[in-house]
Amino acid sequence: MAGDADAAREWREAYERVSGLVATTQLRDPGALEQAVPATPDWRARDLVAHMIGVGSDTLGDAVDEEQGEDWTQRHVEARRDRTVPELLEEWSDLAPRLEEHVATTDPGPLGDIVIHEQDLRGALGAPGGRESGGLAMVREQMADTFAEGLEERGPVRLEATDGDWTWQSADGDPAVVLQAPGYDLARALTSRRTEEQLRSYVSVGDVAPFLDDFAGLGPLPTQALPE
Image (cartoon, rainbow, N blue to C red; front, side, top):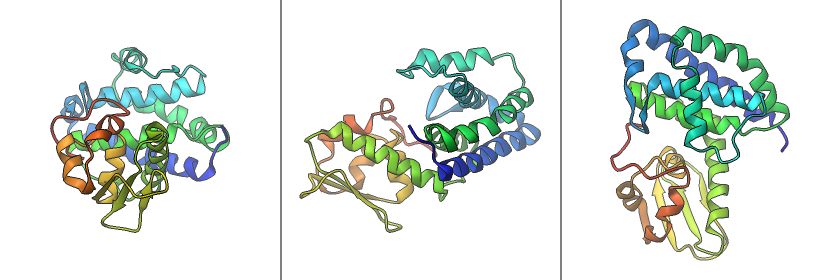
């Protein structure tokens, strides 16, 4: 897989936003980092940060699990459970230049993890931001393509942003279902961060029911609306 200089730039900007948010929170309200993350309720905010760092470490060490399952992600948390938040940020800072280079020259994949989890973390900390980033737009396109691959011959599914000019359709032909929502919400829907009720509320044509499992590609859909 080829790298991507634009993805590397967006990775760096996302890293700076997230690490800055964590550092500021640690100074002002360290207890907030002990709160559960609504999008990943088994993890505290600091656990989510540990996972993000672990993904970077495993990427550089060629140790990314092929299935990327729960056991693999939980190892990131357990390996860093006894570290302080400043120690976590120091490890991430050490990894960052090599990760940016990796995204630029080898594989843009790490951008997806940091962009998706940035919003998960912001939801836990009540700190909106990054919604208009180029990285989120890039990940939305990547996830839409993955979504289309999973549909195979079903659909087409059409997504229309109500607050911009982004429109996407999984294949040619009359769509079986059309979802209309702000572009940010469509991005979060494609990353399994919107409830069934929310997805149904986005429908302007057709029925989303046959595609709910497809929207759960990164895990079960939340049962309650997430903060971000």
